[in-house]
Length: 142
Image (tube, rainbow, N blue to C red; front, side, top):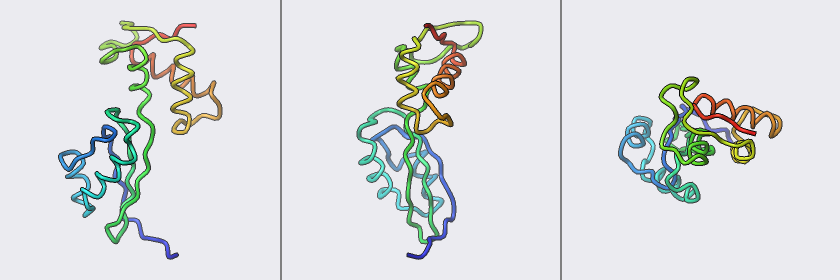
């Protein structure tokens, strides 16, 4: 099989199972000449289990206007907010602590995010997630 020529990549964050031709999806894909409805149907089909959660996606665009896409797991901040049942983090992280999260919850989030993190084991992944929580004004408890 001949190697397809890549013309570019498009990175988007779309709610799982809810891609539609409206902005930001339509304009981002339209300027690359991709069939927007074809992408929306394929994306929605693959992300049914992430319904309503923000899902990062990297779309590879080929010269013949075909495309492939890779779905990542939802952002760590989303899982952290979900675990502590918050709408948003602190307005002044470091000064204001708005909630706390347990080490066990951090490890569970790390397991979910492991594939997308730059870590060799769960302990390293948990440190990354703990840092994200602290930067949101959420303290990590034993």
